Image (cartoon, rainbow, N blue to C red; front, side, top):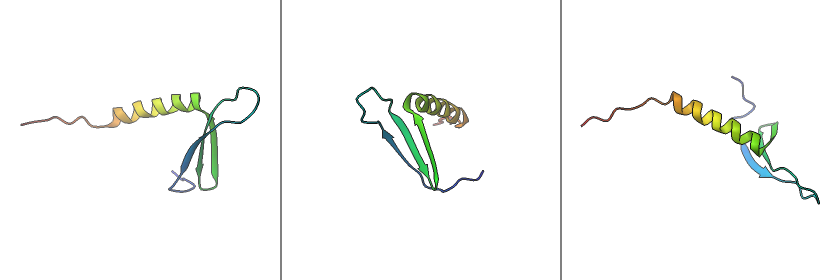
Length: 63
């Protein structure tokens, strides 16, 4: 898989407007930029966390 860079920066932003604005998760990786509403980002991160948890081997503890 090709990635634009190995390092990324992520931060939260919200517009300063006189009307309600949705906070965004912003990610920059090299020249690539992504902005996603935090509610959508939370759903994606929850799904990725579940996927990664299912990939982790369970370790049996023996004494």
